[in-house]
Length: 197
Image 1: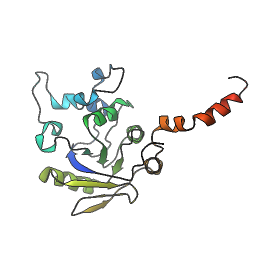
Image 2 (image 1 turned 180 degrees about the horizontal axis):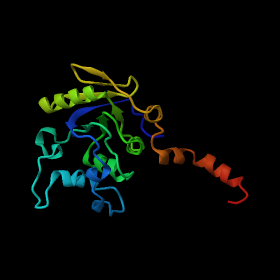
Image 3 (image 1 turned 60 degrees about the vertical axis):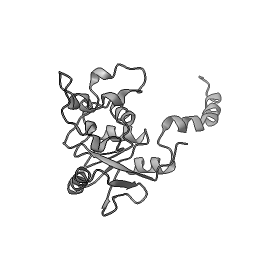
Image 4 (image 1 turned 60 degrees about the horizontal axis):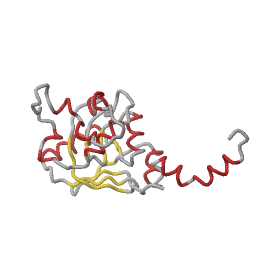
């Protein structure tokens, strides 16, 4: 089984905007790769750099939030194409958890299968957390998967996520490859009894 994930704590980075799609998270031209390794360097590439190679002032390039592993977004984050490269790019960049108003269903599922919690808050609560991060970058955010809360030293918000994703994180079954590997002897037994194998 995979690692059991009950809680995650870290500093946050606010990426504001509704309907941030997977092509904005990782433009398609960077998906010509055999593995996902190195995709993090191109996360939000076109949001960060203009055609002349000049930075646009994206939060991922702001030293105040450098290395912060909790991304806090807004509504419908991860919409668009279902490319797994989007959460893989965020993971390779260093994002280990996401908080938002809502996530596209397939994107949230892809995050879950990587062991990345993607929890939701109300719009008002997500905005309050973004404001806090932007004013106090040192703020530590704790996501409690068991209690389904997001908290800082001064505030706790009620969070939510699909129960199937929550259960997979809590029982360590979020990585389907590990689940299959753990059941390899059972798979072999079933295959041995099939007349067409």
